[in-house]
Image (cartoon, rainbow, N blue to C red):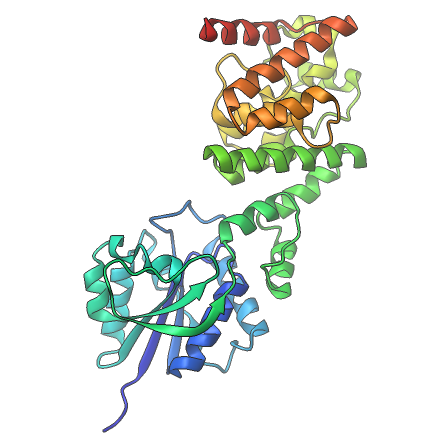
Length: 384
């Protein structure tokens, strides 16, 4: 009898694709010797945020990574645009049935890591998936093979690296090393300016070297707090990278910019007279919108409020305000205290940062902006 054709389906957002993905594909090919492996980048995952990179870029990164892994053109591995062409959220059961119809009579296999097997029974219509395809599982470091529903599956040999795309994105946002990304993929990301690498380069050109060091320190602390408190990491990182883009301008320039562009800022007339340097936050938000194309109101709000604070702050407002005051490059004792407090109670850290700023202004005889006082009064009301 003629052996049935073997088809492997491997879906995911691949945002970005990493060494763990390619190692899993390579071992599946070695184990099953399939006719074709369809790598299917998702339009959007029901379990994750909207992908940061567009489908075309994710597909190109996959091609670059597959080529480096020896799985490029001329091999059985193909990138399939099924979910992208649908243009909407697609569940795995739908993808599996599509390939079942496209390859009648073939043996279908669904490739996944051990982290997915444990929760597979919670996937939408998971039994329909099992009617279409057999599961093929690779053990990821840190995720034991847990199979609460005792589902049938094929186990791949070896172990696969514990790499998470979400963590890779956080590192990319703040310019940290990328041990989990292949060279080809990282070069593509850098060339295309994906994952805020382009915005980071542009922001650096508007700052002194010292200011940029501070910006990266703020962004990294802000990202750690975003992960801790469930804020959107990309939006938080963008606010961090752009929060000081106007800070190295002179007071005269900042005042003229605010007046010329008719910016709205609390106590504007007094600020123009007493401390125009404080306008860098409001000028910076305007520059972020006009020159960087930022339209996200939460990001702009965080940039605008990172110096004086806000009586009614949003989550990213709080994170950036605290991160700006307590980043690793701040070496005074109060910054260390606020930084530690931030990981225990963000609201308390926000209040503490406001208090530290007010005390500093009192001690040095500087003008105290009424907005900072308003923030303090609002926080005091909540605590009484």
